[in-house]
Length: 164
Image (cartoon, rainbow, N blue to C red; front, side, top):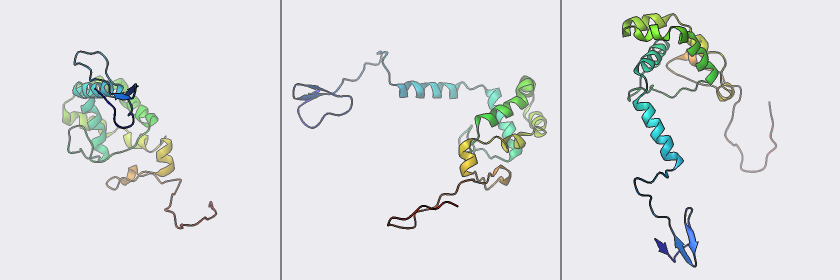
């Protein structure tokens, strides 16, 4: 579709003095945006996530007091953990994951109660959590004191920056 009005937009091209927008791709066209592929991958993974892995992850979070969210698979609040912390937790259960996932829910909850998951989450914080801290009102054991404090601007004119 081409028109002669207005400036060009992203994705359009100029033909003479006319702006031509690209036509929509037919449904069987293999060209898709990267966002479309990412969304398709996320939804496919969410649909086919191993139920045993989800059960094990939920059982590991229960002793910490992390409450489930409104949607299945969500928690009541967003928590930031680092890759190193998650790898350490995986290391706690990796060699016995098959045995743990074969257990019934009650037995699984008892088996993971003794694992030091909370201790793994108290060390090796990612940079953003180490700098700005983390506060979980329901679970004070997961709180991390901030190393950096940022305050609101107190002036509308030029000031000298001071560091403590």
